[in-house]
Image 1 (cartoon, rainbow, N blue to C red):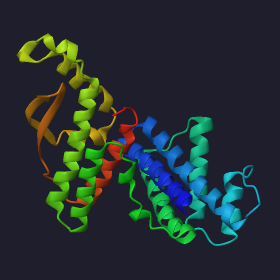
Image 2: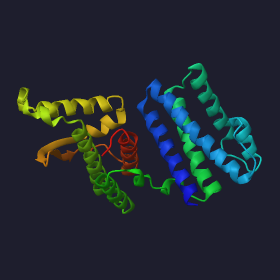
Image 3: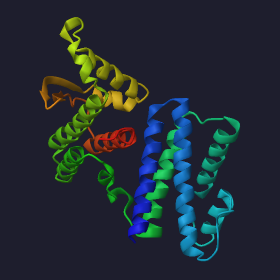
Image 4: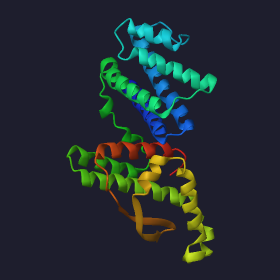
Length: 267
């Protein structure tokens, strides 16, 4: 079952990428969101077909024939809506017709409900309990998120928020040091700012400028202390948690931000 569980975690990760794109509210991101969530539904259906029809190839089956094949073995919730999602994906891919924001968010919700039901019904797994924190490559960031999860389980929202934002702060610091050109720090600019640091801060803005959700989270952080240790820059952050009422939702969004961007860097 390990291979199957790895597959299910991979599909959850792909879905979360799509959900993250949907939150950006641009036409480009809506197109990616539809492709991502459609891909996940199709892969789940093909995996289910391999279990219910062993020895029968589904490679050449189109989406509608595939979903009808599975539906014949047991009714699929929201089948008609999933077929409309397939139409929306075809429109985006072949005709450059992209759904509006409201419709995109609607299909994200439909697919999330489908995944919750199908993970349990087809594979005996709880979609919400499959832990994507293990996909975080950096130990310190992963450790902070694991702490945040434990505090969420204990209903300690303030401590959970602190740990998840510490993880995001660690992630931001890692990216800053990735971009930082130490050899330019001999040049001091206006306001006594080192040129290498100024370039790193600018590169951070360029990295996240299209990620509305990431910018929203990063704007809750303000560094109050900077230290140099062994050629690396370290920040001490203070956080503003005002207006956050759902710590679990905040955790999922921060996790998605880190998972979305971490593969661009070799930490």
